[in-house]
Length: 115
Length: 115
Image (cartoon, rainbow over all chains, first blue to last red; front, top):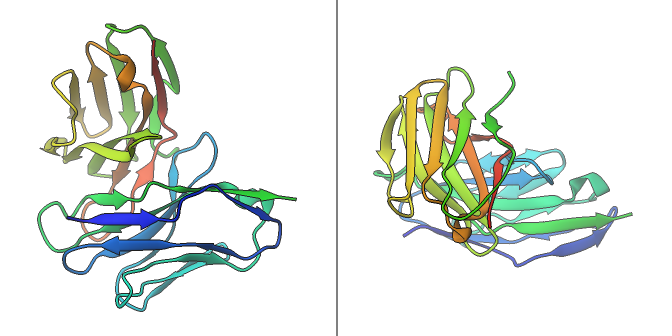
């Protein structure tokens, strides 16, 4: 089956530090990959996505590259801000057939950025 | 657009009581999802509707849970009778099936506490 594994949190960083949140996946076929962000008290929001190998998704200074050879989609940001404090979810959508509407989410990684 | 609207935002009830959660998807979206989020299990897909028809309810925990979508602009998730282990945040999400099916828009969630 499909699965997504994220690094365990919480992650605490100082403002302007470099961020990496690791994400690896297993899937049949060729999935689309996503990062969603959940700010306190809110629902999940799409942060970025990539639909094929070597694609790079980017948004708000965050980037992630679809690496088929390592089955990874690590999230990075060069300089985090306090406003980036949130829970980040890696997800995949398996495009291979039945059930392909469904997103499989990782457990989430809580990021806290301190001034 | 106001986004996906869920109500109530918070619900505290006693074991054995009936709970009804409501969702208004984004106008024009034809797919609707109910998710449950807990610390232990993360995000779990409960049920998926396409064009108001339930397509996959394999994630519904047991017969105490039921969901309906009487029209394109309204869905309910009902728990009867509720139990303490049902305490969670319940999210509704909608999308436009087809080319945009990858991207889910989530509501802010309904936090349920069953005492």
